[in-house]
Image (cartoon, rainbow, N blue to C red; front, side):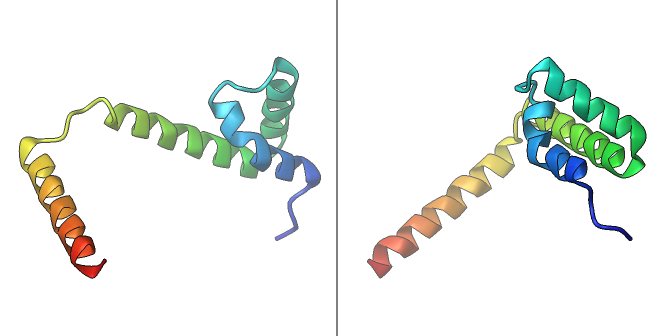
Amino acid sequence: MSAPSDTCKEVLTNISGYLDGELDTTACDAIERHCQEGASCAGLVNGLRHTVGLCRQAATVPLPDVVRQRARESVRRLLDRHGKES
């Protein structure tokens, strides 16, 4: 396996901004061109795009009341334990 190219490293550095739409058109075009040329970076970008989409979708689904209650109880226990240690 060869070391990643400088362009691959640049894609990794800018991937978050690319997926969030924060990069200018020139930078986005460069990433898209690079991904057309290399399956490795294309797979990484597409996989992360899919993961980000799933996370955004999951954020729109409310937690069941039982889960929220357990989370509150866990936080209370942690706070109580921390208060006793201080």
